View 1: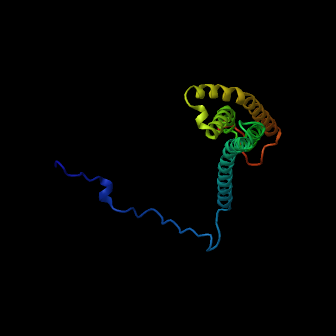
View 2: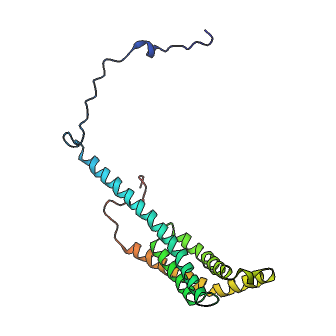
View 3: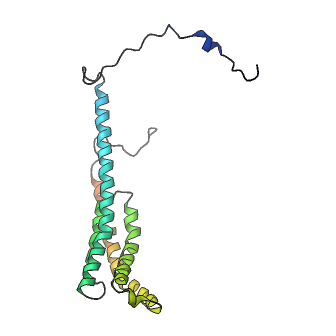
Length: 190
């Protein structure tokens, strides 16, 4: 019997005839849904998907605001004269504030940690792109120190604005009454 497959008693018995046939289910078009709770579950699932897509779009817009506004301000400052200045500062603070308003609850951490990096990289990138010949050799080290020192007040202000917006959002979220049907944060076991 080596290499042969053994048959079980269940395979020899054939199909079971004592089980009743399962009735056919009606489609929505042919008479409606016999279970009305299924329709509400489907609607809730669709609403959940739409909220998730809106959050994803909000995250992309937040990232675009956090990077795009400082970049536009820095380019505007470079076109107006040497070095980044007030347009860059306003763009960085405004972009960080908009990102903090639009981000999700879990995205708040990313806004706070990315703000100094985005501000410094944008300021140094715009400065370097405006005059790359100036930052060759020892000029690069001197320029890097100047970029950090010049961008620090903007970083601190943008971070303070992000913290303020996040604290206000957190306080408002806690004061808002819970939605009907929203999970209470407790598990099934209580």
